[in-house]
Length: 249
Image (cartoon, rainbow, N blue to C red; front, side, top):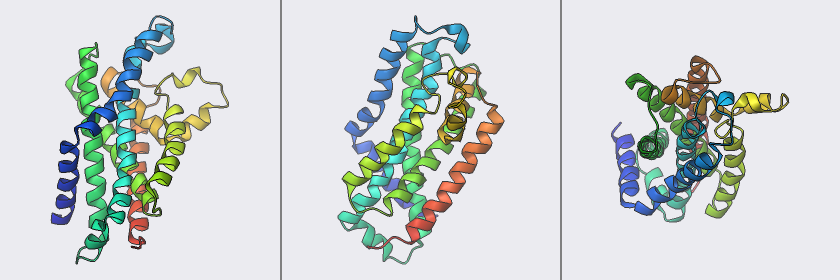
């Protein structure tokens, strides 16, 4: 546990010292929330959403912030490879599993913190959490999403050497995941042939779980959402740990 804590602490210190990283990660979700949400609020029918469009958009933007931050945490692996830190860590008498879990915990924590920052900012523009329990439900889903996609990013980074290539691949993966998650539109408004594709996307269940916690409304049963995102987090952690063990310096 000491190794996991040490690597987690290193990630947190890097996060706190990088103000530009914090601003950059919440900038795009906040921009979309303010301009897309308020711009379309009078156009999109509230009856089709069951709520105001801006409030419908908040959980999606929180999910976006968590997704982007967590999945790009994997780039730290490539950075550490290139600057020799990872080699020094791997030759130390510690388990590679502990190293990977520390990296995952650090990436997931920073992602959740940034999601919470965006949630607080959302309260300032009108978000009203239904009850205190809802906040903790949303937080739990954010943690699962953060762990799952941080481990996913680490799994991909473990097989790569170039940061530019990693960013290109992640962009290719991220935008379909986000676009099909129902973060920007209700799932029931999609064409029938596209709904099954949306339901394959694990982020869909994270978005709906966070939406249920923050607004009390969900297009998918919150129990189903919890089972899927928890299973995804466990599966990705196992896959990430396996690939990280195979990493070569």
